[in-house]
Image 1 (cartoon, each protein chain N blue to C red):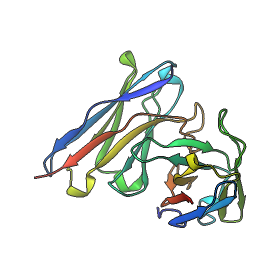
Image 2: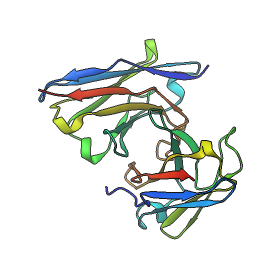
Image 3: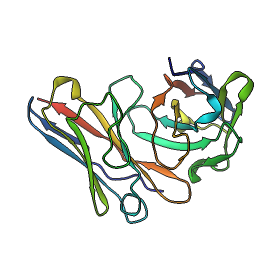
Image 4: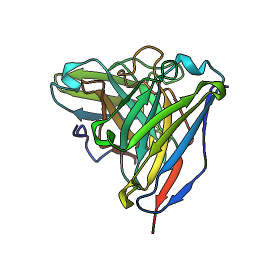
Length: 110
Length: 122
């Protein structure tokens, strides 16, 4: 199973919005509404930010939102804060009881 | 509180095996799937598979089909991941993560262990 495609890096200034894309195929992202997003700070374990494409776990700020169109899922972070600087990974069901992650995107807050 | 605590770092020689443990506390161990995810140095996350702690049933990513074994001991609320025939490129941090209670394919990992560094070196 090939990794989902994410931009290697994105950046934005405090207060701005950024969107991170996650592109797959009709066999994974496009075929199921099981897309999740994880935030990972250096040296730390990942943290669940979005699941089922657009649902937020309790405790995750509503500045974080998810969506999907066709074979591409997106994570949008509005009102950027310095603490949002981290790596972000998407994850999707890929059929046959398998899951697949994206390659990861480094978010830099300028 | 709900947490997963993993065993300590390991250094292994190529061809050897490693067994990483993941002890759950603060919730009903048999009620939630446990997934294993690894991350090579400077690289992204790679999903390895899951185990149903209640039934012991497993599903492994195709990449790992022939050389990973996931087990559990419900008496001590602990899951294990055994990787055999280690190669240099198996050097990575190995994480266990709690999955959904009823949907192992949803990709919902809400609690993560602290990670176990496995180094393969001659």
